Image (cartoon, rainbow, N blue to C red; front, side, top):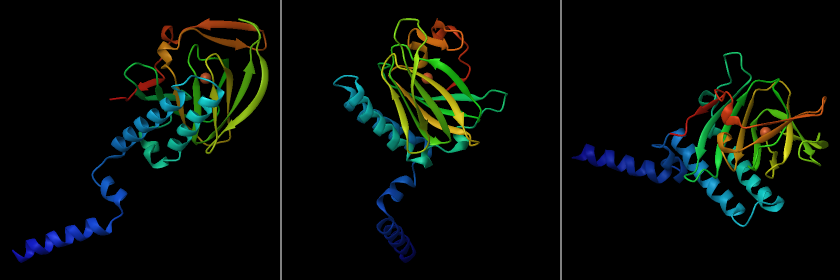
Length: 224
Ligand SMILES: [Fe+2]
């Protein structure tokens, strides 16, 4: 009886002396904590965007995504490895809400990847960094299929992010030697973003396509 009493006493003492967050985390996996943090971020972002998608509201949503990036321990590299099959990039689909309005991917890529100017169809987009840096070149389009005009470059690295309104155009070029671990947050998942436009700025050619017609094997669905 005494032994049991002492054991209970030690257990109680343990719970009293540990910080509350440590006690809560003892029995919760990284995956579950990540899931909770993502749902909380999406709820806050939805609150920001509920009144309409505009520069001011998407900037607020961007801040929420950046806060999630600060929880680095929730995105260990072993859960989101870089490709090892000759590809440059993988998108781990980690969240989509019930009405397919908010979709989050963890982007894991090797240095050296790039993507020509493109929009994301009828979806807004926010990209924020956990590790690694890439340059996002922002463009302005003056006609349906005309060659877009370069506007500015933004370095997306830990502590910074970029946002695009629906129809916004960006090109991506990785920078530095560090593999990328970024969060990509969209109003719709890739498959339902509708017709996107990509541009070859050298030839002036515009290409209209939907991603659901393409090879999407670079996306790994780990939502469940
Ligand atoms: Fe993009």
